[in-house]
Length: 279
Ligand SMILES: Cc1ncc(COP(=O)(O)O)c(C=O)c1O
Image 1 (cartoon, rainbow, N blue to C red):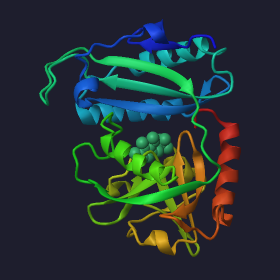
Image 2 (cartoon, rainbow, N blue to C red; image 1 turned 180 degrees about the vertical axis):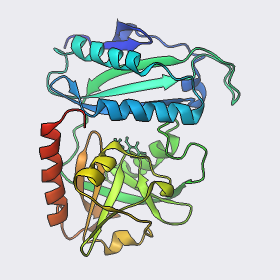
Image 3 (tube, helix red, strand yellow; image 1 turned 90 degrees about the vertical axis):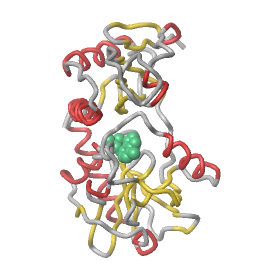
Image 4 (cartoon, rainbow, N blue to C red; image 1 turned 60 degrees about the horizontal axis):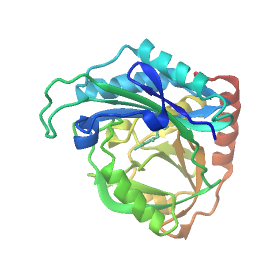
C-alpha cells in the first residue's frame, strides 16, 4: 500500500515521518479537541458541520482557534494527496491540541497543534450489540457537549463492551437518564414515538443525530435508562456508522432490529446523504 500522508499544522508529511512533541498537551493531559468524518470516494461528508463543531469544542475548551478556512484547506489537500491510498471508504480525523507545554492542568500558552489523518474505515456490523455500563456521563461537566480528546471513560466502557462481544456501551447521566454511547448517540422507539436524549442530558451534539432530527424528525426528551427495556426499537448514530439498528442490549434481544421505524429512517438518511455531500 502506498504510504498515506498526514496534515501537520500547515503542510503534508508522509504518515511515518509525522512527529508531534512529547511535550504536547494533547498527549500529556488530553488538552485537545477532535472530529471524525466519513470519507467516501475521496470526499468528506458534512465537512462544514464538523468544522463548526471543532470550533465550538475549541472555544468551549478555551483553545486558540485556527482559521477554519486553513483547516478546510488542510482537509482538501490531504484528501487529494491520499486519493489513491483510500479509494473507497475511509475515515478522517481532525485533531487540535493546546500544543507544547507543561504536563499539568495549567496552560502556558504554546502554539496549538493541528493534525489531520486519514485511515482505513472501521467495518461496523450491520446491527449492533450494546451494553449498558454503571459509569455516568456528567452533564454538569465543564466539557459536556464538547468533543475533547479526553476519551478515557469511553475507552474503558468500550473495552467492557468488546469483552462480551458488544460494539458499543451506553451511559446514563448523573440523573439516571439515557445519555449516549462511547462514540454514538442513541434513539429509541416507544409506541409511535421516536425519542433521543436532549443535549441537556450531556450527550455530544452528534452531527448524525442532528441530521436525523432534521431529515426524519424525533422528540428530544429525557428518558430513564429503563426505557431501553421497554423500547420497540433502538438505534445508535455516528459519522462512521450512520444509523445502526441495535439488536441486543446487555444480552437481551431487541424484538425488531431493524424495526420499521429504523428501516424507514435508514432509507431516508441514505437517500438524503446521496443527494448532498455537505448538508
Ligand atoms: C461521545 C460521542 N457521542 C456521539 C457521537 C456521534 O457523533 P457524530 O454523529 O457527530 O459522529 C460521537 C462520535 O464519535 C461520540 O464520540
